[in-house]
Amino acid sequence: MSYCLNPSCPNPEDSAPADICPACGSNILLNNRYRVIQALGQGGFGATFLAIDESLPGQPNCVIKQLRPSATAPHVLQMARELFEREARTLGQIGNHPQVPRLLDYFEANQEFYLVQEYVSGYTLQQIVKRDGPLIEQEVKRFLSEVLPVLEYIHKNRVIHRDIKPANMIRRAQDGKLVLIDFGAVKYQHQPNSTNSEQTAFTSYAIGTPGFAPPEQMAMRPVPASDIYALGVTCIYLLTGKSPKDLDYDPSTGELLWQKHVHINEHFIGVLKKMLEVSVRHRYQSADDIFRALDLEPYLDSLANGMVAQPSNTMRKPGDYRFGPDSTGTPSSPHARAAAAIRARQIKSDATSLQSGPARSRVFDSRASASTSLKSKDSTGRGKDASGGKTKSTRLDADGLQSYYSKGRRDFASYDLNSLNLPKTNLSGATFHQANLSKINLQGANLFNTDFGRANLNRANLRDAIMVKAYMNNADLEGADLRGADLSQAYLLNANLRGANLCGANLTGAKLTEDQLSMARTNWMTVRPSGKRGMW
Image 1 (cartoon, rainbow, N blue to C red):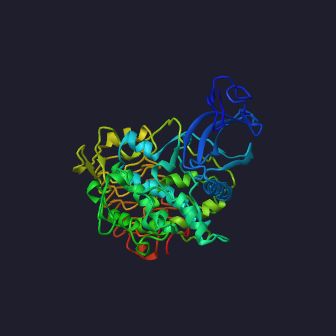
Image 2: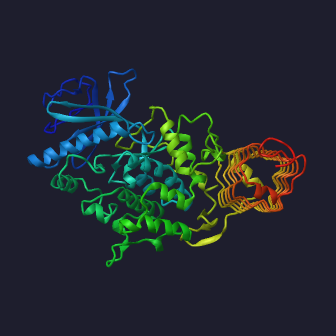
Image 3: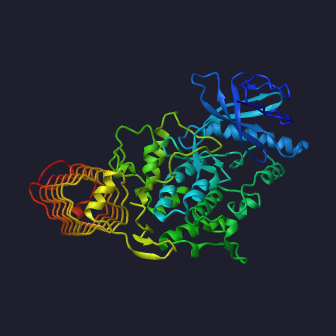
């Protein structure tokens, strides 16, 4: 199969792999290596095609973007060419990130401009929501944990994307990673050597997507916070399945009226409202601001797994969700850890392209619902029935929990699991963020690398449990039995240890304060964070 890229070709598709188009006589093989096999889409300035690179072993797939403006006026063609070159330059500059497309080639042939990127199969978020319906709060937070570091990365490189939306984010089928695509509308912050008239002309042809672009961007004055607004609209789309044009708005302020369509907690509503502030000065100014507002550490699994190199002294936090303390032993902020991992990453990436292909799996981890028979739940642990109404807290019995875990499910965030009897159970790497585990019996259980962030473990039996690298930030462990538990390298900062029994527990390398430890019960057999028994 061959496809001719001559815009005036009367019959561009040819079932035979010819080198010359039989319909118009144009060369089929671009730059003596790329054979186009399928048209993928057409935008305002370019058309994208699936191709194979015949110069490489195995003839891998790639995506070719051809400059093809819809208007033919000379000044439009010139602007299109410069925007096209800007996209290539941007990808060349920032394309070494694992969640940004990597530029493979950029050339001119037959007075046409071409940009070549890696191809990857996957679904866009827009396609996934249309297929599977809206997401719950936990899934949207996990989405934010993946995309915010990418956004901060491009902003630190002085790039404003200007077209953040569900159709421009692909879940890579190969590894499930989220990839931000389509940098054709980017703008450099404080771009040198450009006049106001030039900027106005460029922006008027690359303004972004109405409804997702904020007012200042529509007024041709985009700033990094403009991408924050578009990301907020994207979150609303993921939660509701409704595009901006399907939502009402306040005619006096221009604000989207979306809250009646979602079932999320008040804190998350507040965060989204600030992302969607019409006024730039009242909006979050950076991705790091949103990280701090949401405490997104428990949802950093995809980000952590996407890094192929880490400093040797970096300790992983539980559940594959986060990075641990720095070389000084002081935990850095979630986004600082993400940025450090990005900087440490070698120039090696499984990047995606400008299109989607057949998906092999759902974009978001199906772990968020333990079974199709269970109600979906919001962040409080309450379920939602088909009509969107709230039901009682999602409850699992011991057999159900072990069954789901054995089938690969790991996310039990916000579930009601109090008083379950699970001695010597293997639940390593599971997520119990904000779950109710009061009075649960996990004596002798394998809880290695498990996430108990903000969980209720009041009076839980954790005696002799393996809790190496467990994450218990803000967990309630009041009165919990931790005698003989292995808590080495566990993260216990901000955890409530009042009355917790740590006699004989191993706290080597654990993160907690002296004040916290003073509230717990210890004895001469307790191994302190320093590795020594006895006094602090």
